[in-house]
Length: 77
Image (cartoon, rainbow, N blue to C red):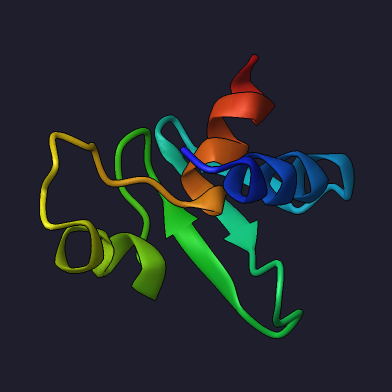
């Protein structure tokens, strides 16, 4: 995971942009567009970065991730 992803995730949490909706459902605001937010579970996010992860990284043994998903992980710590 890139340092940029972690930095964005920490800022999302610090700014109060992660809201628990249900047991395994969170709403996380976009770091670049304040009018957007994404629905995140413990292992998926509906943002384009998450959806396109494998297309850009071609597998490479990496598990899909994004700043929104990482923000939820930090929020839960």
